[in-house]
Image (cartoon, rainbow, N blue to C red; front, side, top):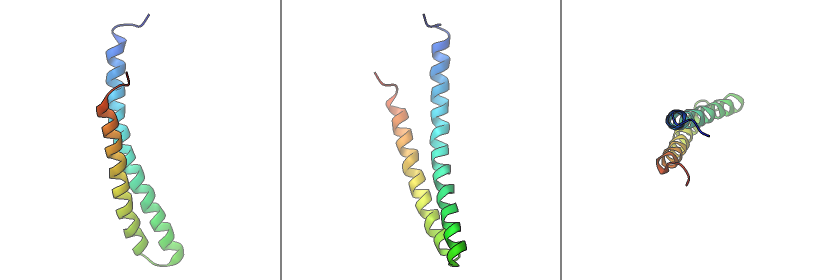
Length: 79
């Protein structure tokens, strides 16, 4: 039998972790793309062109990942 006091705490915890997940999706995608661009520039000697290109790609990709996570969280729990 489930503890009635525990259920709201678990729901609140899941909601908070969902917010963190959305933020980390954005940051992780942007940082990963910047590191890829930096690596290409380092080995190809094209500084800073690929860094700038991958920065823009990372920000757009991170924003899309953020929106997907936020939309999933707004739908609520599965029924």
